[in-house]
Amino acid sequence: MLASSASKPFLSTASLRLLSLTRRRSLTCSANRIVAHPPDLVRWVRREGGSVHPNITISDDSELGLSVFSTGEISAGSELIELPSHLPLRWNPPASPTSDKDDSVLAQLAQQIPEELWAMRLGLRLLQERAKDDSFWWPYVGNLPETFTVPIFFSGEDIKNLQYAPLLHQVNLRCRFLFNFEKQVKTLLNDTSQKNHPFGGQDVNSASLGWAMSAVSSRAFRLHGKALPNGSHEEVPMLLPLIDMCNHSFTPNASIVQERDASSPNMSVKVVADKQIEQNTPVTLNYGRLSNDLFLLDYGFVVPSNPYDQVELRYDGTLLDAASMAAGVSSPNFSSPATWQQDILCKLNLLGDNALLKVTLGGPELIDGRLLAALRVLISSDKELVQKHSLDTLMVLGNGDPPLGSSVEVAALRTVIALSVISLEHFPTKIMQDESVLKGDVSSATQLAVQFRMQKKLMLVDVTRKLSQRVKMLSKEKSTA
Image 1 (cartoon, rainbow, N blue to C red):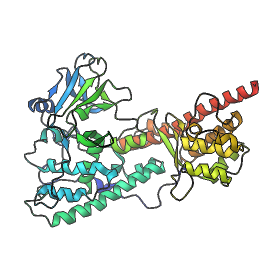
Image 2 (cartoon, rainbow, N blue to C red):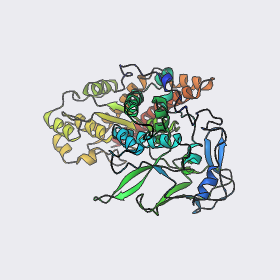
Image 3 (cartoon, rainbow, N blue to C red):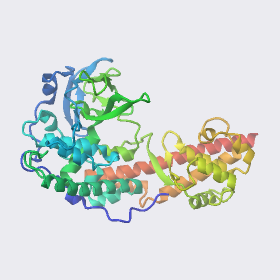
Image 4 (cartoon, one colour):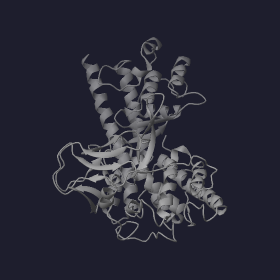
């Protein structure tokens, strides 16, 4: 169920302003980059043994920011960018965490970072290179943005403007982590000598840590590391100079090709044109089939009409009772299923001590498979018919005949439609109000927050429309029969 915002107040993002590293590499910059006139990144890549197609350049677009663009026509199959193995910036923990080196301090700090915030681990490495006067990666670091548009840097009001509890929860978690991690960093660095200080003695606070984590989350790629016994490969996050200026598209014109795994000294990373690229066209890559939650949280943008966007709900029998009542569905009490139905709910992991109650609406499947199966089972009174079908069959919203019959299917879909309507009602504003806000003179953060919540609502409207069409078709077929 869409809940209200978390009970604890959100941490003030005023203290997350980019005060950061102040002694050597000033954050003052122009064109939204760390330095006013950063080194030529394309020239640096070529000088260090990489290659860049002659028709590729960096362009400062008003909407896309610093992006990789074509200056002329490029044929399909062309290699656009190639980076040799020493150019990607990665996390390389020292062999001995107790060694008297500045890298060992980073290793101790990295141990305090939860796995889901892996970007902070590589972010420490990025901060280390930013602090060095003679950093090999300075031509890359100097071209990084001064600020990022991710929600941890939103004002408190714009965080509330998101109006979506699951994302608010994630933003709050990250903010709290940054403030707590700042204390851990300062405690460890206070006992570190100048010689072994990983940041050259510079102060590191929640703002600089937030900048580094955002830089990595919005720009790093997970490449193949060494092979694992199960046949897969470990994932190695890396910052790929120049390549990470390629923007996202679900229909990209280029893709990344990795030659050899990340542990090989001969590893290289290439961007190859998947189709012909016309002049003055941005080079795009597919960042993944992600929801707008992840795009905004990690990358700082929202994808309109995102086919992979979803709304999270909590599976709750009382909520289903209310939805079925609103839909005019005559069904058993969802909050009091029969014993055989409870057994199936346990197999779906929707009932029991360790049940996973988060379900979703939207995305390519429209309905979370576990939710759909549960509704079909709870609405049906035919135990034998239900047990003839596998859970996999019950979890799929196919285009063929419904597994438990049209009557059960129509009742299940009407209940989901009611759930969508209830979810819409949990947003304090309407779509028309959001559109009105976007037409006004608002900050970029406010614009992103309103775009995000509006896309959630539009997605729920789209789910309702598509399911209503299916209900109409099933009802018509039943009437004809």
